[in-house]
Length: 236
Image (tube, rainbow, N blue to C red):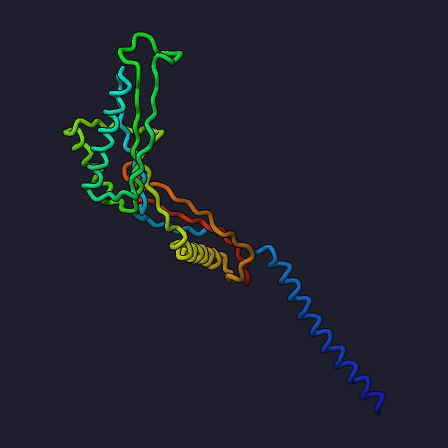
């Protein structure tokens, strides 16, 4: 009788073991089948913000043959420009008067013949300020300097007006959170379409950030953009 009971116990133990083994095998098969079930999505967040820093090079040029007179004229122009800036709210700390650049046309190897003047002097006064709106209003009024006999020339590609947004680090966490949420929403939609459920994150990058002008006509408005790429696993 005891021997029979021992067989029964052994049979029960074996049966339980086979059941547990079956569950483990099924789970293993499911895990193997699902290991490649994943989706990679991109999340985008972007916002437009006004620039909070402006660098404005004010360029003036003079030509002539009398070097001493040209220096007197350029100093007069610089004084008039500086006074104009201060009158309109720019402080001394925001103004830098750069040394003039002198070109002696007679020393130029090319293009020096038949010139009616010898010297070409370029003077640049640089305004760097966080008061972007105020500086923009002054830029619109710079023609007032013509009444003072000061001709301002375009700085061109070498000395353009530059607008910047310097507080990216403050807005970065919020934008990153929004980009991740948008990525998750996209992944959820994919999972629903494929009759799956979104599981854990397998891989995620830190996001690609960029700052650029909204367009060529409004360089003082910046477009901040972040794109993050996230890979999720899917389950049935």
